[in-house]
Length: 123
Image (cartoon, rainbow, N blue to C red; front, side):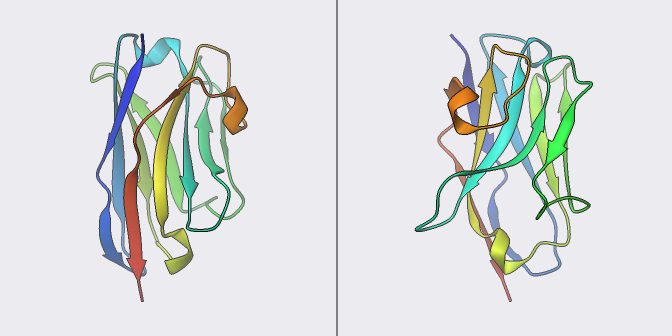
């Protein structure tokens, strides 16, 4: 059974940076497709960034391209999301997700979910 747990959220001013971490257990992250989603109050959960199981595929939401970077450290069995130039509209609960499939491009393709970590960006 795969378990994932996020950390690293918090309060940051607009223009600042945060790095989220997602620690995985039960399977190596190198054998999983993984992704970051976020959900703001009153909105649907949306895909922020995704990395394929082989690591050769990455994709980002248009709103995060050029500002966010997804990566993973196989030795630490951890997925990361580096978030730069943060904006108030990035405020949301951020979720780590994993799948046994090749890639995650929607919520329905994710099998394993973390509990989420709150990111709040103030003006």
